[in-house]
Amino acid sequence: MIMKKSKGKKRTRKVFLFIRAIIRLIDKKIVTPITKFILMLSDKLSRRTDRFERWLVKKNTLVFISLIIAIAAFFMIDSKTTSLIDSYAEVLYNQKVEAIYNTETYVVEGLPETVDVTLIGRKIDMYLAKQSSTGTVTVDISNLKEGTHRVTLNYESGINSIDYKLDPGAVNINIYPKVSTTKIATIDTINKEGLNTKLSVSQVSIDKTEIIIKGAEHTINQVANVRALVDISKLVDPEVGVATLENVPIIAYDNDGKVVDVEMVPSKVKATINIDSPHKEVPIKVIPKGEVQFGKAISSITSSETKVVVYGEESSLAKIEYLPVEVDVTNLSENKTFTVSLQTPTGLRELSIKNLKITVSLGEEETKEINNVMIETTNLDSNYKAAAIGAASIKTTVIVKGTKEVLNSIDESKIKAIVDLTGYTEGDHEVTIKVTGDDVKATYTPKTTKIKIRISKK
Image 1 (cartoon, one colour):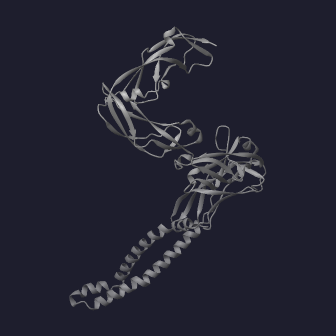
Image 2 (cartoon, one colour; image 1 turned 90 degrees about the horizontal axis):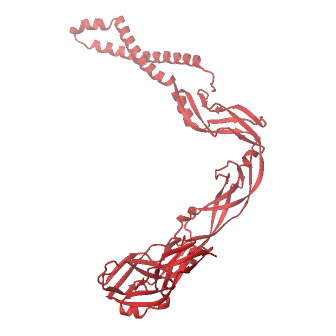
Image 3 (cartoon, rainbow, N blue to C red; image 1 turned 90 degrees about the vertical axis):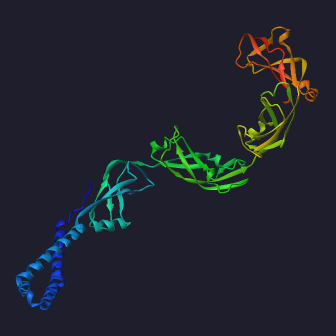
């Protein structure tokens, strides 16, 4: 800790002279006028107060009155003076440390960025010190060479009557020669989720990719990569086209993804961002879920919209052929109009419409059998092959239920009987048949629900 030399003796003498001057001023300005006033008042008193007058005009009486007033004034002024000269302490937190050295040649480690400064002094001086902006914490290490050193921090202030303490006041530092290397910056695009859901970032580039990193050799060796953090949320009113973003920070990271504190040239770059709005129009496919009331069947399904525009990445758009919309028709006994909220499929960002009105109409149920539907296998591991055991496991009969009009329009070639062999290995297995058709107004049930197959290696 660093302390300035005290000036207590000089302060005490100044205070003594100040108090003596105050007492003389009180005697001249207060005691003497009061005495004159009392004498004037005594002249006007009646004869009955002669005894009081004789006592009041006595020299000793006037002296005692003056003394009492002077003592009271002294204590009042002394209390005020004490409040001005007593020492106070106040802490200035997080004061920036300015180091003086050749930053192009050396790197300094161990030097704190900020310290706490405790100021000690008179209240009036403390006030001036806090109002002043000239106080700085410095350390001059310009004459030191590489190696380990213990250095002392110094607080410079324009108020000389203030004492101070620094925390810490002295620190151990390491000085290393500064070296440099070059890294190619990669681009990290962050906060894309804040972009309008109909927009997409298709490409991002920066004006400088070669970044010079400088620092101590052991620190530079920790740098695994440098990245330009392009923050999409900083774009103002983005729209389809090309946007630019200034002052994109360059950050250095180690192998664990932690930030490495090194100097980088440039430390900021300009990013060019291509924004587009990939989309695709697909049909809406209404899929009824559950079974309507016994004896009834769906005769028609109509929707307020038949197509929808979906927005998303090109790769996700390529995979979607229609938008499935489910309607719960469980125990439905009469025609009904549903209002359905559309759900955005996984991988997509936005839909051009949010709600649909879907009307389901009912009719009388009839039944139709479709014979000789071939049974297909799916999801079998490529290292295996499957064969049906017995003729009954090759084909099946499918029972189709619906209204007469729906059954008459059924395309039998679109009816599929499938067994899912996910996870099956060598051996004989009994598996369940699942039947599908392209007309969702009808229901499809296999007459044979299970078949036997044999799985063997190829």
